[in-house]
Image (cartoon, rainbow, N blue to C red; front, top):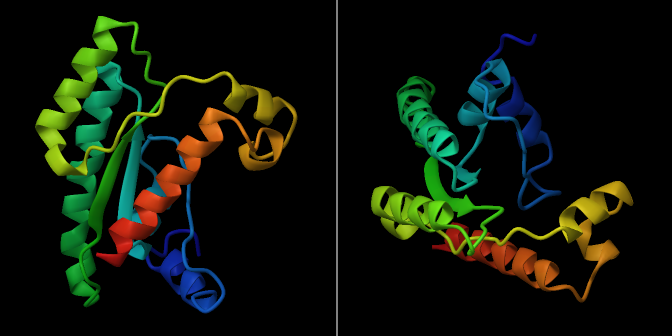
Length: 158
């Protein structure tokens, strides 16, 4: 059933011995899928551009996670934790992005991760239908992606 808020959690339990991490990338628009994700997850990472509308949506998403943590208590699930805010498509040349980073850092403090710069290689890899690691294994963006993976692993381990 699509309306079962714990269905995704049940399915992920089936692969718990096979996968250490499952990343689910969704659009920010709230949906039943988001409810299922919030009920299934242990940690949340929110990617966000440094634009004002994205920042408003980010705050709404955090509020949504906190609200759904109350539902998790009804099932005796531990609360989902905010692992990090990952600023993306950062353009150092713009004052707006510098201001956006300062707002994210002010609001989320230690949860704010170093921004990932705008890099066209991500689009190139997408058009080539390859993951970045295979498309450009020596590119700076690939090193930045590996650093993100390390942050996730280190954040979950603590």
